[in-house]
Image (cartoon, rainbow, N blue to C red; front, side):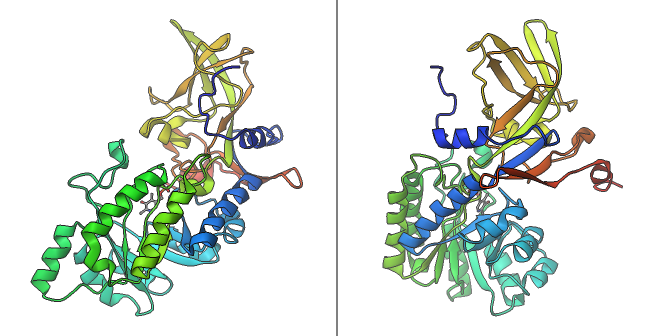
Amino acid sequence: MSQDPTPDFTPQRLKALEEIPVDALPSPCYVIHLGCLEDNGKLLASIKECTGARILLAQKGFACWATYPILSKYLDGTTASGVHEALLGLEKFDGEVHVYSPAFTETDIEKLSHFAHTVVFNTIDQFTRFGPVLDTKVERGLRVNPEHSTVDTELYDPAASGSRLGSTLEALERFEKEADHPIEIDGLHFHTLCEQDSDALEETALIFEEKFQPWLKRVKWLNFGGGHHITRPGYDIDRLCRVIDHFKRKYNVDVYLEPGEAVALHTGILSVTVLDIMQAGEIKNVIVDSSATCHMPDVLEMPYRPRISGAGDAGEFANTYRLGGMSCLAGDIIGDYSFKEPLTIGSKLRLLDMSHYTMVKNTTFNGVPLPAIALYDPKTKNTNLIRKFGYADYRDRLS
Ligand SMILES: *Cc1c(COP(=O)(O)O)cnc(C)c1O
């Protein structure tokens, strides 16, 4: 047996994603497996049941709103990074609309005032300027920076020294000393994790508790942000529940989680087609009708090598290729892979785990066409093509 390059898929998930019929779909095309998505929803709902926590979908990571009727059954609402995502949550998801942004404009706040359940401010200055503009029904929170890093990738570490994301303990203490009265917030929010297990949450939560103790006693709710890899096989759910329980009991607060990736983890594929194969020195380049930079930018940002169904590491099987995209960026490389059978022009490849941080980050750089979006229902075995993009979508983002 060959080594599984990403052993964190359960065999059932892998099988489910490999069974999605793609031949009748356009290429490239994202396909969401509704059964897998629903299973993630059920797992998250089980955490709500055992702890009483509330769980929101972070739309930044996954905003395929055609699936919101399914997710609304299991989650309490959405969280947004600004007005547009908040409006999408309002329009398409049956639940609470939470919003956090590194900075709001006055117009943003006037709009959000009509429908947001909760607005979380990044700084005390934004809170004092805009808090009074909000309708009194809207809950006000403050994002704090516990200044404890558990993330190795700098690009994804909001708790790093000098980070612009969240107010430090020092800023809070300074404000209250100068103002001579306590800050009147309803809740505290922190977000410092990225694809992590609950040991990283526990570690961070302890430091958060120690530092922000006086405010913990005064607020109605806590939000532990996203980055919890809850739906990854092997995630320590019991520990997560213990951490939530501890805060709920000790401080009599509501606890929110707002995962993005975990909602859509291992639920979809990107189906692509081989357009050309060319030898360059030692390297056999394959060009597919997709692009790392346009359709899966985390491949370059994180960086990581997405898993491809039936493919192994370079050299593992007889036919090794370097897969590249159709943009003119020299580094638009998906990765090196090997296959048992040689690839040919027209071969279809199935990139796995392409639901989250893909369609939300797409660009039309180089005029590369956007992948279509389809849903696969395992009950009926039907694929439903819900969106196709064309020239007008490229043109209308420019002028
Ligand atoms: C990105 C983000 C999330 C979601 O993070 P995931 O890693 O997708 O779970 C939640 N809250 C905030 C504030 C974020 O910036």
